[in-house]
Image (cartoon, rainbow, N blue to C red; front, side, top):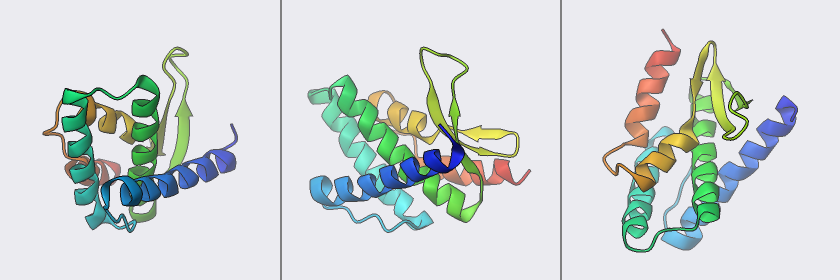
Length: 135
């Protein structure tokens, strides 16, 4: 996939995250850094749901990708970088934001928060990613 096409896809996915948050969780995501606290709140709800009634693999994949796209778009707009597809492992390709020689797989962090560790904070992760990108 060409970079402009990938960028458009991820921007559309970020919009899907806003719609999902509003319609399914009554959470307004406005695209600024402060809204990452709301992303953490939404992902915490999904983590609790996952414990009692696990999401299907397809739903989990979709949720992680749209929320990761939303977080990635905030990172790109505040720090810089571009979307890239990582296909090193053909059985598990993923999207990440590349900045210099660094890569930030926001959807993967969403997945780990939902499925494994609710203490993960996307807001903290993005703050650390910003610091790492500037080094």
